[in-house]
Image: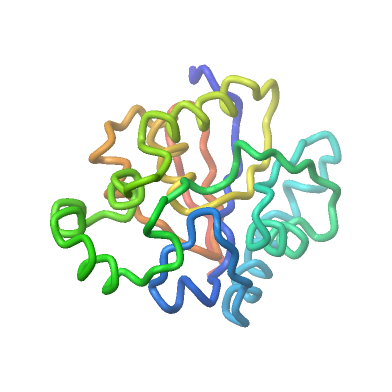
Length: 193
């Protein structure tokens, strides 16, 4: 039996900066048309779950997650929790991956996974603080919960629940438009077929 209640995790839909391969972190970028369609797919997947009005929904304060939640949760009320914000990526925020590779070649080449790159960014949050923030959310959950947040946030969340190390977390797939269901130390993915 897992120490955490069941979680439905939704990553926000594609943003303009996602499409440009530009690091967002705490900076804002709106959903693209594709991103809104991905949130609609999540809405179809979540409709049966959200019939139970007792399931709380927690959402990142960042605009892209808020936009996704409004669509994916079908207008359902939710709480905003600042602990669900994406990892702060310091000087890398707003830059493309190519720009980072040019300005910080050593960091870029040593950290091919986005999780590691964000966490090694000068002036960034760092992995330990990021993981501690996510663990604090997990430890506060008292019942099955829907979480709407970000890609790297979700990788660490999923890794903690499934007992993975940092390298395994960094290598996890990071899909948009699906729902990750986390229960009893395992995950399965709901997708629109």
